[in-house]
Amino acid sequence: MATTTNTTTMSVPMGDVPKPPYDPHIPSPVSARLTALMHASSLQIRKELESSILESLVYLVDFPLCKPAPPGPRETQAFKHHLRFFTPNDYDDLIEERNIIACCGYALCAKLKQSTGKSRLARVAGGDWVERKTVERFCGDECARRALWVRVQLNEEPAWVRTEVVGEAEVDPENGQVSGVDLDSVEPEEGWVAEIRLLEEAEEAKEAGVWKEKDERDVRKLAEELQGIGIKDAEMLKKRKEKEKEKEKVRDAVLADVKEREVREKVMVTLPEEVGGETAAIEGYVPKASKVDE
Image 1 (spheres, rainbow, N blue to C red):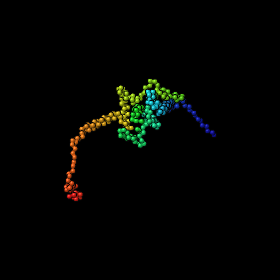
Image 2 (cartoon, rainbow, N blue to C red):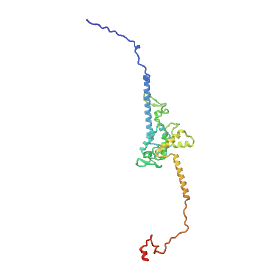
Image 3 (cartoon, rainbow, N blue to C red):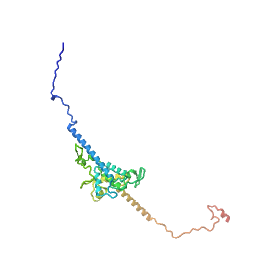
């Protein structure tokens, strides 16, 4: 006899299915897409800025363009303009690239870099020993001061995190082009004001009384940079010269008191005519010749 099994099916309304617990740390699909787009845009802006820095570095390697004549105001502005995205590390790369072609590391100088020999260390004017490669980066002390003065003014933050650089930057989602940032201009626009001042301009500003606290900090940083390559700052050199002058005054005063003794009469020393006996004796000994004469 066959056995029949009755199966009962229960239907549950969809509205009664329990939902997973809400997790505030899990972003919604819309929020996740916006985050991904922002991250991609940041990477694209960074990529374009790094490319612009590289192009500026290549451009400044051959500076100044009017060799051997000194650079004019136009080239000076172009030099500052191409440093607008640089960090101190980027500036060090520029100096190194110029040194590879035997040029002075200061981009506004048309001279060749100096050579101090082949040893690892080089002796500088103050008598100190420093790394030879650091001294040979420039043609001399003056260009070292000019170049390092520019370096201490550069922003240490990368350009892609500076609000003044990327504050208005936008990326086209269709083609990835970046707008709102001047990436490829060779010369600045008319009226553009540079944040960097050359050493000569800074000295003029100090004489005119237009001096800020930041300038004082930059001067201290410059002194540290120069000390690293054996160049003393201006104050130390001034004190050293003052000490040398004081020593010269003391020496001159001592020499002024020294007088040569005057001899009024010449004194002639004559030997006695008698050569025999005790007169001819040498420490009590009478030579044989004297004894024979006797």
